[in-house]
View 1 (spheres, helix red, strand yellow):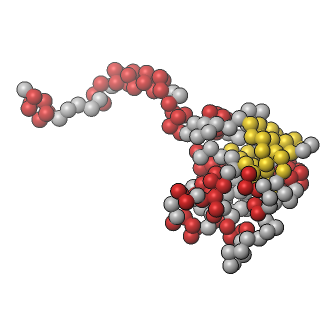
View 2: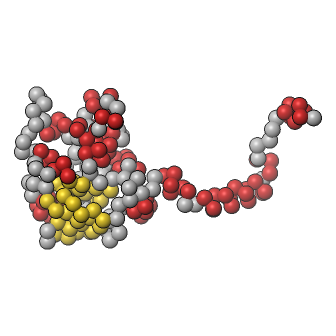
View 3: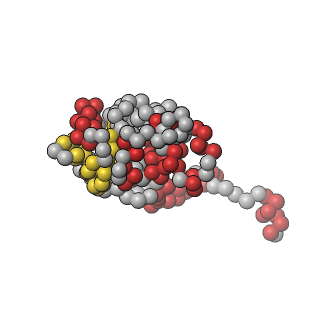
Length: 212
C-alpha cells in the first residue's frame, strides 16, 4: 500500500449521517470483478435517479470532483454490512481519507487495510469542515503525522488508533505489521521448542523404519 503522511489536494463535503455500505456500493454491483473499477459504482443510487440519470447538483458530479482525495461526512459513516467493496469503491474513485465523527467498526478496519485513512473528529469540528468546504471541491490539507486537518482558516485535530496510524504511515498491511516482530517471534519459537521439545512435529514411525 502507498504510505500516507500528508495529503494536500481537493476535498468534498458529503453532508449526510449514517451513510451505510449499501449506499457506498449497492449490492447489485458486487457481482462485477474489481478489475472493472469500483469507483464508478460509488454512491451510485445517491447520485443518480431511478433511471440512472446523474444528479448534476451532487458533489461528485461537480467539476474537479474526480480529483478529490478526501471526503468529509457526518457520524456513523460506513455503517451496515461488512462488505469490503464499500472501501474498494472509495479507493478506486481516488479517495485516500474519509473524515467523520464516527465510523462503522468493520468499515474502519477494512479502510485501514486498504490504505484509506478513517479520521475521527468531533461532531462540531466536522460541521466546521463541511461549512468550509461548501458545495464544491475545495483545497484540503490532512497531516497524519500531526493528526490535523485544515480547510481555509479552519483547522481541527483528529484521532486514530496508534496501530492504524503506524500501518498507514508506513503503507503496511497486517502481514507487514507482523513482520516487524519477526526477530521476537523467532526467539519465542526457539525458546518454546527448547522448553517443550515434545510439541515439535516428528516424522511418523513408518517413515523412520523405511529409511533404515
